[in-house]
Amino acid sequence: MTLLTNSAEISAEPSPIVRNLKMFARSRLSLVSILVVIGFFLLAILAPFIAPHDPNETDLFLRLLPPFWLEGGDIAYPLGCDALGRDILSRIIYGSRVSIFIGLSVILIATTIGIIAGLAAGFFGGWIDSAISRIVDILLAFPYLIFAIALMAMMGPGLQNILIALAYKEWVIPCRVVRGEVLSARNAEYVEAAKASGASDRYIMVREILPNILSPVIVVSTVRMAHVIILEASLSFLGLGIQPPTASWGSMVADGRVFMLESWWVSTFPGLAILLLVLALNIASQGLRDAFDPKFHD
Amino acid sequence: MSFGRFFGRLLQLFPVLLGVGFIVFFMTELTPGDPVEIMLGDTQVTEEQEIALRHDMGLDLPIHERFVKFISNTVTGNFGLSFYHRRPVAEVIGERLPATIELSVVALIFALITSIPLGVMAAIKKNTLLDRVATVGSLFGVSMPGFWFGILLLLLFAVKLQWLPVSGRIGYDVEVPVVTRFLLIDTLLAGSWSGFKDALAHIFLPAITLGLPMAAILTRVTRTSMLEVVNQDYITFAEAKGLRKRVIIFKHALKNALIPTITVAAIETGSLLGGNMIVETIFGWPGLGRLVVESIFIRNYPLVQAAVLFYAVTYVMLNFVADILYTKMNPKVEL
Image (cartoon, rainbow over all chains, first blue to last red; front, side):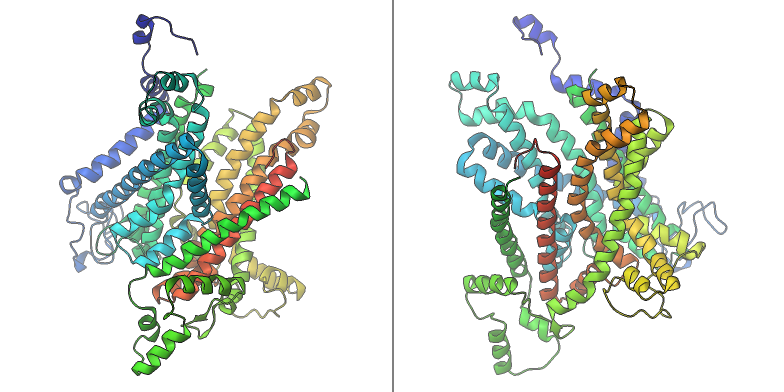
């Protein structure tokens, strides 16, 4: 890194985030993946306008209707219908709301808590660090899915409980990342300079350190959002998450299990939706990491 | 690593384990409803009987005394009674454990024998088609929802092609004398080759489903660390000495490149435990994971509580082993 001496040079230099995002956009695969993610977000927001049918409308005459390209299929129900005659495409579109809402909320809650706890632990050290680190160690001692399943089993199913069950452990991950980054930033020159100029602890943490450590946090958040989406789907698949009749991808896969032999499409398409979104998030996070990490810039 | 250091690291486990016990204890406090009422269900009892039961279960004690009792019971392996089975929880869990361990071990073996060669080859033949296949494959592997992948495998290999059985550990017509409770071993001990093949056919799909994400992660780890090792000075030196490429890779590079793979494998073995619940449910595998899921739906909480505790303690121990392995193999690292 070059030391900047005059102000003209400083203003000419684009901010690290902008430079990194430009780097990110250079990779075609990353760009496609981020477009897929944005596509799913739009699907979730615009579900009532896009979905061809009411996701919960049952019609027993349409029971297990095959997708349109198979014999007996109907183009009005492109991906076919489930055992209650509900349109699978519409349910997948509405199901994206659950996955994305939970993925996004859990990550937002967890990252906020993680940043606060990680900043405090890394910056203050001492007993604050010990206390937070012990809690982190204890929560890390539980395999994630088992922890979530146990909490859901005790609290009962439902949207709010899923958020609690997943965020309960999820914050540990951004917390560890932030703490590590703060530890290495604590003695950096810019922090020393801020301290010398009499800035308050809070100012240094929030205005000086935080913007500089945001890149790894963003990378971790995208990859964790993919995890959270799979976890929610797993909980709903087991019947511990989103309850019927609300459409969720995990429970849709579970619904189709019984009819697998004659009606493979009931389970296959919602599973494909999970795979697509999670894959796109994973690729995007890899692209972000490559773009943010100076090691890959050459 | 000196014994003192090892012992110190071992001591650090205690606060973590105590914390784990604390959380598991309070998990049941979250449960809506009264455990005694849940346990009794529709059974009609007098008020005196209910009070007696409450006393037997220790529910009339203040919370801190209950916690102390919970911890001392746990240490002595007394997890209470499973309402449903009307037998001690520890006994019920013990019965289901071999099936789960067998499945996890086979999944682990599957993950290791696929990921290590694939990761090594991908690193050696960097930027070739094989490398790209390995990279894309491992991305798919980590992104695949396990429950969906398992169902697809079932649909294809068990239902459509009928190559493999749909569920269970072994055919009903196969009789195996119980020795180790691991069917792959017991059938061999009994000299029953057909029984062994049957057990293998049953474990095949669940093990692949369970091992896939781990195989994906390990492929990536092996590839990365192999690439790093290949660029080290001593490898360049070996090449300069004129050693054959194969000798260099297998004698010099691989040994060091596998250190991260083994460490990550030890940690990821803990994640197999979580996957067990899903995989055992899909494939009707009579192990602990399925027992826990079933117990949740019949509100058999003492069993769920004990199983979660068991999983967490196993997980902590596996991480401990991973740490020790890492230090042992990599003398530069200090605990």
